Each structure stands twice: as structure tokens, then as C-alpha cells.
Image (cartoon, rainbow, N blue to C red; front, side, top):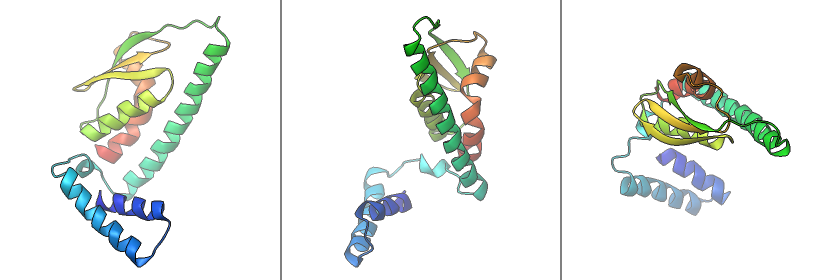
Length: 156
């Protein structure tokens, strides 16, 4: 967290002057100690070369899913005769870390047409604009697996 804050500070200030570096270092050291004494979110992050590669792959996978779902929802708006079948479905995740589950729930919510309502244990309840199946495994495959395979490597 300290490194992330410090890099963000430098990028926001767009300067490598001594006073900017020193104040950024101080702020980056103080904020995590003050606000996140027992934060476990970043302790579960793996910083291996494979995890870093998978984070890039996750980003592009999310981008593709985002574009596809935006186009799908836009098409449904422009073609009102296209049937929709909204509903709430349950999906399962294999992710064990809290931060991995949070990122998965956020990725699902950020793609139009799906919205994470609740995360309970390894179950997630998703509102889906067009429920394609009532089968738990099929829904998990359609909604979760595309993101989960990368998050497993990044967070376990």
C-alpha cells in the first residue's frame, strides 16, 4: 500500500522535486499506519511475475466483457422487441480471499446487464438482465469463470 500511494502521489504531482518526493514519502508512510492498521486486503496479493501477467490479462478480459455487455445492453435498448428475461441467479466462486471476491463482484457489477446483490461464502447472487439458464454450474460458467481464472492466480 505504501508503494502504491507513493507512486500515485508522484503521478498526481507530475514532479520529482525533492520536497514532492519527501512529502510523498511521509504521507505514504503515515496514511497506511493510521487508516489501515489491520488491513488484510493487500496482504493476499501475490506479486509474482505470473500474477502480474495475469493482472494484465484480467484487465483485457474485463475490457472485452465490458465492451460486449455494453453493446448487448445498447442493442436491447435500441431493439425493444428483443426479449429480456431478468432474474436473480446464484453462482459459485472458488476464490478464497476476500479481496479476490470483492474484485470479482465489482467486475460483474461493472459490466452492464449484471449486478452483484450479495456475496455469502462461496455463493454470489447476481441480478442478470437476460437469465440464460437456471443451472448453477452453467450460470457460474457464463458469469464468473472468465474473471475467476485470472483472480485465482492473483489472489488465490
